[in-house]
Image (tube, helix red, strand yellow):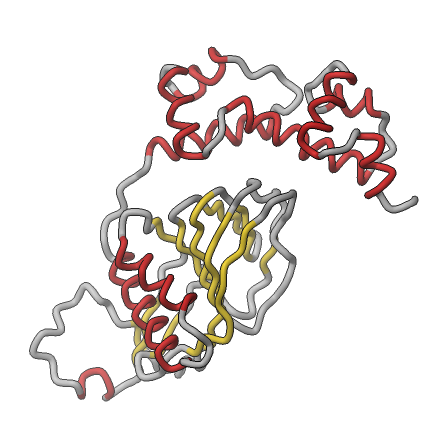
Length: 285
C-alpha cells in the first residue's frame, strides 16, 4: 500500500539528504510531503503511521514514504534512535505504464522492449537490510555525497532503488528474536502500571528469561527493566505536561507507587524534579 513507483526512463532527483538522532522524547511530525522519503534506521526504533497503517521501524529497517500521503507518529521514538534520510522527487507515472518485475530474465532482451511502452519499478515499502551491506553502502553514498555533485548523488539514489527492488524480490527470513523483543515492548507499553516480573516475560515469549533478557540487551542496548523505566518516565512526562494530576497520582498511574522513589528516578533521568519539570515546561492552563 502506498508504494513509491519510479519510471525506468526518469532518474529520481534528490532534494535533501542527511542524518538524524533523537536524544529526548519525540514523535514523528504530522505532515503531507510533496516528495518521497527514504528512511534507514541505524539504531533504536521509531513509529510512523501512514494513512492509518502503523509501521514500526527497527535497526536495519529501510522504509519509503510516498509523496502526497498523510503520515504522522503517536508513540515516542526510542531515545538514541538514529537514522539516514533522503527526500527525493520522481516524475508522475504514465497511465499506461507497466510494472517491471526484476525477477524476470532480461538477458538477450532488446532495449526496445523497455521503451516500446512506459515501464516502472515498484519500490518495496519496508525491508530489513541489516545483513545486506551493498544496500546500506548505497544509502550512505546518497547521504554523504556533497551537494555540489547532484548528478552522482542522483545516480546513487537510482542504484539504491534498484537494489531495494532486487532485495524485495528475495524471500524474507523472519527475525524471531526481534519479534519477541517487540512483543515484550508492546506488553510493557500496555501494562506500564503493572509489575512485570521474570515469569511474566518468560511465559509471554515462551523462552527462558535469561535468554530473552540477553537478546533484548544485545538488540536494544538496554535491559528490559531500563526500557520499562524509560517508558514509565515518558508517560509521566505526558501527564506532567497535559494534566493537573499530582505527583503522587502520576507515580501511582505509571507503576512507581512511591512518589519519593518516582521523583528520584525522574530527576536522575530528566535532571530536574517532576515539580520543577512541570513548572518549567508545561504551558499555563
